[in-house]
Length: 163
Length: 157
Image (tube, rainbow over all chains, first blue to last red; front, side):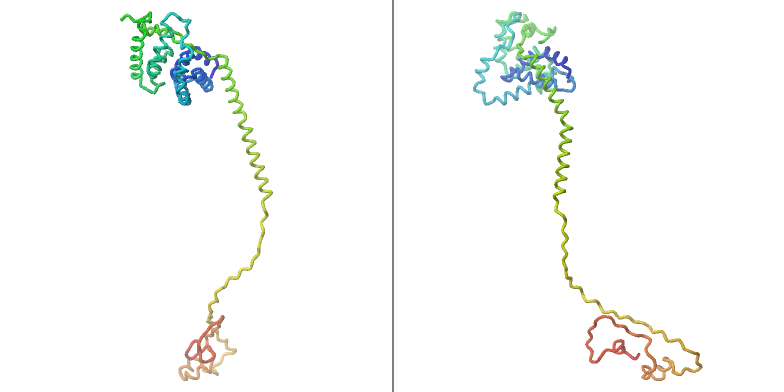
């Protein structure tokens, strides 16, 4: 693939892909990098490169998590020691640490949908293709997750929804 | 990072305002992508030389195998196969009567038909039979007396 296109996709999806992979495994950077390397090895750009990248990252992250199954005991410690998910410099929104903690409490499927939609910019149809579910299923999971986040972040979210 | 969208609620907008931390080394990634592409191209470039080398090796092996192949040795053996005894062959030939040397008004010797009519017993003494038997091959017949064409064919000849 064209290096310029790779660079463009890297700018557009890199952070969201790392965050997405972080929901599934404890080596998100490696997984995201491998996905971009596989993208660069393609003869031509996929029809939907964003969804393609999320799907590849998901598969790689699940494989990585499966391979690390023997290290389950250390997962909690690793999660506690993992770097911050969000850039603390961007202080316009809610507290990044609070959002990270709230996201951690969500079921994995809901976290995937929230990250892919809010930070990855994927539609629910694209998310359904990534997760192997229907778009309505993804939308319902998203709405449940949003409700949970609203409840948990209600006090700390400055831009809380008024209605 | 996601772009601002109009269809988001306030909570979604505030959440999407957070910037996820990336962590990928862009330069390293691009270098690795180029390196993989290079190794892929070099693998593709080595394909035909590898095929040619393999074929040359196969040809060489065939040549060596052919040169070391043992020559064929011809062994002659006499094989005795018992053959069945040939069947006896009996050939019947008709003897043509010799043409008369000169025409005769009255035959000196009466014809066989006349003789047979007048004296069947004298028929055998007058002329040789028109049929003769040529016997080729062995034959076993229990006969009390030596075989003669008459005894084989039976009847007066």
